[in-house]
Length: 295
Image 1: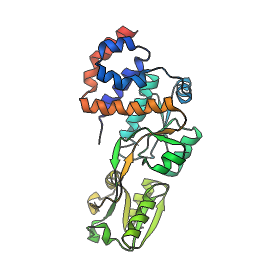
Image 2 (image 1 turned 135 degrees about the horizontal axis):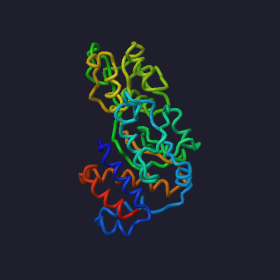
Image 3 (image 1 turned 90 degrees about the horizontal axis):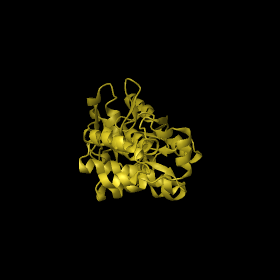
Image 4 (image 1 turned 45 degrees about the vertical axis):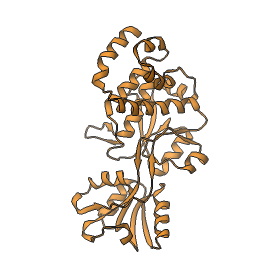
């Protein structure tokens, strides 16, 4: 599931600028669209929202660099699906998609940063699990990418299936669901394995490239992204086996329902915009008209 970058952020900018302007919105938007925007557009007094508006910046936790989700380009600009989520929430709450402070976090750091208040939103290819939802003080606002754990191996090994990896050593990242899923899979198939743990995806792929392990295991989206960073990407293959379901999405702290609703409906609006075929080009003229009416 992939969503357009600019059209969704523009839609949330529109929502932010129309905060408390429902009369205008009711005249210009169809009821079915309005029902999706209402929760975001209502003026709220949630603690997180107040803090974000007071400092004028959204602190958003992202990865340390994962192409397609959150990474910087040659100019140092953050890009990716998770980055767009950060910008959409900034647009909805501050009226400016650029008012985001991106905070790169490792897997081990991400939850502490959210729980401690260092970040306002975690948008970092994070799997929605019952443990994280029920016992770690977090709320997942929804799913922006459905993933699954897979395996990448060197083509020279001639391996075609994960069941041929009995006794293999795996490179993987600490602080993820990957290690537990790997253990479950090998136990259920009566196979043995070893692990080489890294703190970041970059370290894991370097270990794989250096021959520290026979295979790299992670979410398939991450495997495809990491494969592109190899000196010779064609030297590795990603197996067809998918051994888990990994619904990824943005996360907030529990106990702040208004902030949760803002993030949840920012995501829902982006999904709806994609389904309706709403693009930034389509919004240029309405934005100009509404700016004149509002101001």
